[in-house]
Image: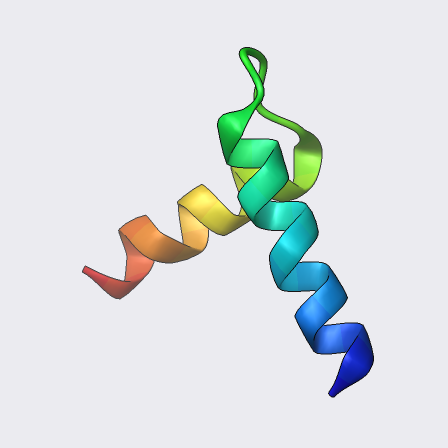
Length: 35
């Protein structure tokens, strides 16, 4: 649970960065597959 929340926070931070982080890119791909 704690680790999951931390991961979500990192993904959110990655999306806010000018250059997407690796985790941000993985999260974006997951979102695209879900739609």
